[in-house]
Length: 379
Ligand code: SF4
Ligand code: SF4
Image (cartoon, rainbow, N blue to C red):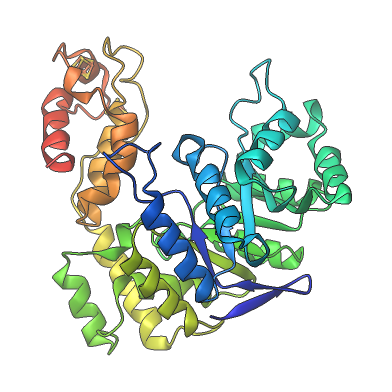
């Protein structure tokens, strides 16, 4: 395993994301503990020491699972636990950061958390946490007490908000952003990496393989590009991970590993990772892969959401089209299924009233397209 120095500690370059664990009966709350325990122990034996969970992952059972595994195997001191305060309920009158933290410590069976993040921050959310909850002081007090060893935030907004948070969050030790070779110019993106380096804040990267989309199980054109540049032996997942490990300012790269094969492949890739590892040919291959992806035909929905309010069945129409387009683009409908099932479970309730099509500025035949989406994603 390769490591990165972080305030005198050695953090593994591969982080184990605990949000896509194997489950039983397709139920996100029923984690397959036998499999997960085997994977966690294998990861630890092979040098992985950063494990990333959150209050909401697997409906709270992700924190519980890793807590149980750490205690039963006496491996708490070999693991850096990163978990996140669920920030989406900040307007709820019962919202209490401290109550949530206590529950997390109990789930994790620990008296401290190594890396604590404000989850999925956006600019507006940050302003509320800063002004209404005095969150910077709150986190720094807990850090001084030793309950939280390092504090930071994960982020899903535009660069300007990222900059604002980094500028205002005194004591911020690290931040977590979504980044991969397709999404390198959205959200924080390349600019965010450069700014975080300027501020001396190391980054944890999530979605380096874009939730599995960059695996390309069925894409001969992409295989041909890799062959052309002499990197045919590199798996698509490895190429995606290498792209991120290559960058300066990255502490660790999270991969949401759902089975042992994936874990082994990622550990092997992490073993040979280094900053500056992308060759000229690898960069050229990535640029050509991007071009191929840009050319995919899709449903021309702009995401304007005009269709949403008038739908008597509350169907998340733009989300359904987005999942379809992403699945088509990466030729991997399975990579969209988890979020699709969460957001579009009622898509079959469409009564074909046509209210949505009448208002759609793109004149899309929405009820027919929804059938197309179902047939593709649910197949
Ligand atoms: S046609 Fe279907 S999706 Fe469109 S508004 Fe009616 S019920 Fe909703
Ligand atoms: S109105 Fe049309 S373009 Fe706008 S989100 Fe709905 S389907 Fe997409």
